[in-house]
Amino acid sequence: MKKALGVFFPLYTTTMIMLLGSGLLTTYISLRLASVNVSGALIGAITAANYIGLVIGGKIGHFLIARVGHIRAYVSCAGIITAAVLMHGLTEFIPVWVGLRLIIGLCMMCQYMVLESWFNDQAEPNQRGVVFGFYMAASYLGMALGQMVLMLQPDLGLSSLLIIALCFSLCLVPIALTTRSHAQQISPAPMELKFFIGSIPKILASTLVVGMVVGSFYGLAPVYSSLQSLSTQQTGLFMAVSIFAGLVAQLPLSWLSDKYNRTLLMRINALLLALAALPLAILPQIEFHLLLGIGFVVGMLQFTLYPLVVALANDMIEPERRVSLAACLLMSFGVGASIGPLIVGALMQPLGGNILYAFFALCGGDDDVPEPYGEERRRAVCGRCPATTYCYAG
Image 1 (cartoon, rainbow, N blue to C red):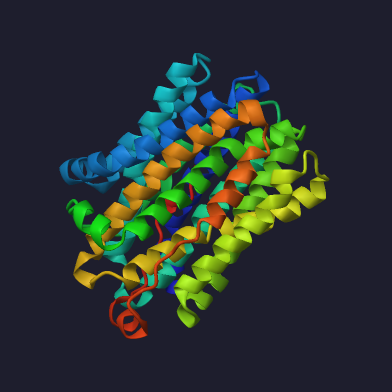
Image 2: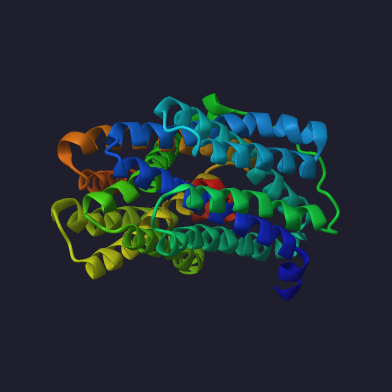
């Protein structure tokens, strides 16, 4: 464990700084627009643009890394993101912000691909789980710290954008100075979408719903807190607590998913999410300490949905199709994360901020998850498949 941490420490540092900037940017944009009375539909559209960029970036990233290599691809994307972040300070024209978020999402996908392919290529088979565990911890920690910045910098002015730009600039330093050998070139994963639609349609549908939940949370939870009359500092703490809950939940989830039936766990998780979200869906106003507690529980449940659905999918598919499966699951997640903010954002205007958690409760009630082919099949094909960071990042 210490060896994995030491060897990959520059990449973990890069990940944490990058996600700090990304997490802060997502919440900053939602709060900034809500403060000038921009409709929830437009805020949802900007969030959707980010996830559309992530989906597109999955294709472009392979080409870019193959052409110029990992470090050059990462550096070029970080430069574009830094420029796009600063562009937010030059104009408040919403269509421009939509375009900027799409560009940032696209470039961040390329950065994720650089980091994850590097981890996969350089990690020893017997330590890959530990390597990706530290990677996910660095990701959650970075996103949570990004929310904490709002507690120290609550004015939503240009200084916040400068901090975000600094993060995307500084994340270049550890990866540029690493002495770790470069990862090998990656090849695009085949997309056997038709096969998976025929063999695991409910899994793909569940993945899409999970994407709708996570995408809506990152884009519109700050708007919900704003409509609850929370200050910027309180919103930052609420978001940080909710995201940190995802980190706390990963270890017990890993243990439980290896011990018990994953379909049952998925159904229990979804039902608990529906129940936990109900108070925030029903109560027009809620005490801040209660909001933090319920937000923590909802965060634990919503951020454990994707790892479970990935594990279930891998239980049902032959090992040789797993690379293609990962690509299709990520596409389904990205489409859902684009659709969710559009739907919830449009409903926020007439129905209020509580519709966000009513939407979570509704999605949690949709727990029609298929059974794998049996325990024999599960033991034969299942393997540990690390969830990718951008399924948790805003």
